Length: 155
Image: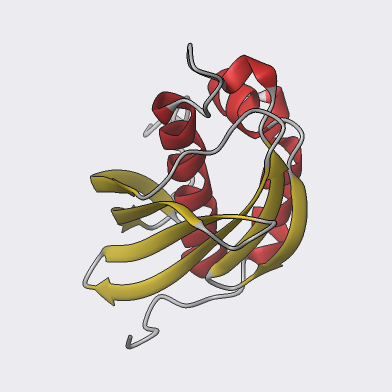
């Protein structure tokens, strides 16, 4: 990784993560998380799977996992480069199920960068035995933050 975009935005990323439960969709998937570590290109949280995120069999639903993975990826990439983001490639590999009220550990890490693209891997494991539940991989396009010119006259 050439670290061309690497800048420390971890404090802003942590603040966003702490406020994420106020956002409609992210809030449903992240409410109740415990933030363990936030640094440049790395976020680690603990999470007890709540009832409202279960499927008909009492397992953590794949849809809820995908929302959490996308939010964790975006925040981790933001901690790394502090830029606007767009997911352009997103895959999930499932290894086992996790049940309601089970605690998992989630670690998101920036693993690569190429041009305006940043790659992040999100690893989710059961806390008790370390069994892998799911691995998410994302490529995100980053663009510089720009000050809005809306409402400014060119006269």
